[in-house]
Image (tube, rainbow, N blue to C red; front, side, top):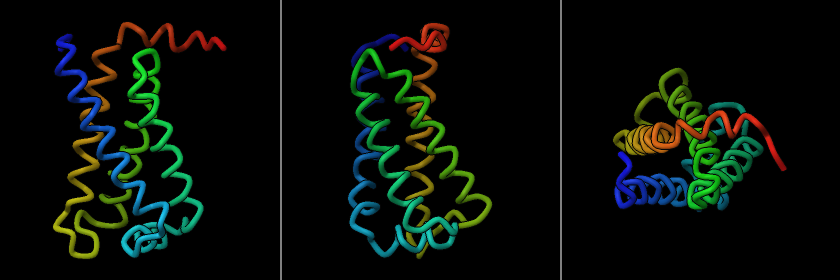
Length: 129
């Protein structure tokens, strides 16, 4: 898994999915508003998760901060997956499960990135400014 091309493809898949959903969150698309209303956190949850996903995307693309971005992305996607499994259901507003599948793909990409940089985890824990 140390192939740089493979890692960049994984990064780009995660980032493209994360950034693609931002448009819907930031413009208040009907499906996004429905999801976050159902979760009881509209509009702050929708905008807040969008900001977190934007930050994660930027961090994933910067080699020095990829690990931190992947951890943030994996955490955000874990929340999305749990929301789907426990509250929303896999299919939301007849989307055929597309959002759930995209969350799984992004979560797995972030896990691959975390695994790829697992030797840097102790360094991340030494919080330096």
